[in-house]
Image (cartoon, rainbow, N blue to C red; front, side):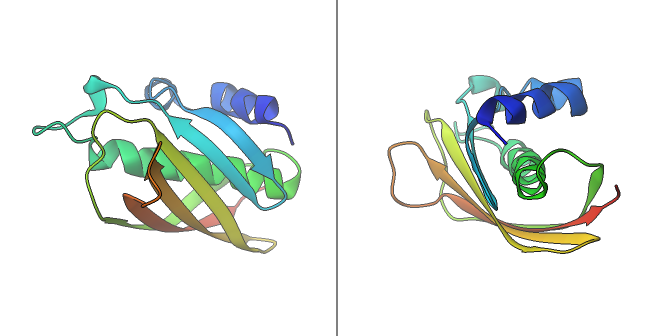
Length: 135
């Protein structure tokens, strides 16, 4: 799968409000994907940090791209579980969302997601996800 095919999945299969996040696929690999969440003041909460809701939606969405890449294309799937920890605020920076699929089964997929502000070596958040593969 290519980044352009990943961007097409974002356009074709996600709700308009998810598309409004402006996510872009930067890289895809056999069991991984990297997406960019552009900084927007619209996604900031009081105090100027990017909202946890935006970060969690981005992590959830990026996981779909990583699983699609691992499977060789999009198939219907749904989130079963997502656990997110927030370690530091993200202010005035794009976020790079790196997803690594740790187990890809016939009906379930597991992944680890790291959310890092562009230009930083230190992650701002981490998520673990479980997806049901429906197709």
